[in-house]
Amino acid sequence: MTLDMFILGDQIFFNKVFFNGRLGHGETNNRGGSSTNEIPHKIKALKKKKCISVACGWCHTVVLTDDGQVYTFGGGWLGLLGHGDEVTRTSPKLVERLLKHKIVYINTGWNMTLAIDDQGRLFTFGRGNTGQLGHGDNCSYDIPTPVMGYKYGKFICASAGYKNTAALFEIIETSMYID
Image (tube, rainbow, N blue to C red; front, side, top):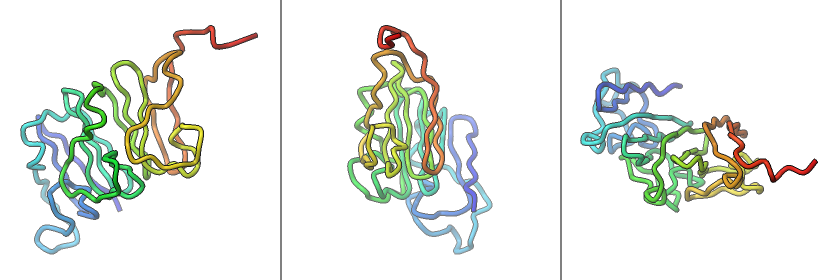
């Protein structure tokens, strides 16, 4: 089953399945009672925001605005929305723990979220049972947590799958390597 998304102008639209509120319309069931919603609808909570990027995991959605703010909604288990809890949210909620950082890049994995700030710091949160969050353990994190390594360079982009993550990292300080 897929989740279709459209960004038209400054507004973000979603259609299809309303599973766990991941479409951001404030509800978990389909409009009109049908199994699909063929007409895109505006997400009212983002009406006054300029959305520049969007990413979808299995049951959650992440939106980046032009001012570097991150909004998440959908299934919240294992902390993949980044709000310090496991609450399912049917409308976009600002990830407050990232407010100190201007986020320039977002992506998702199946049950995790990635964000990179303008300093090249990578933050991950959500399911971490196979080490895919990059924190040196197999733990899940319910708040954005920086991946170590940014002291020696910066993350450029990252992508995640079901149980893995890959990232491009630009090394700035080479003194950490010993021949």
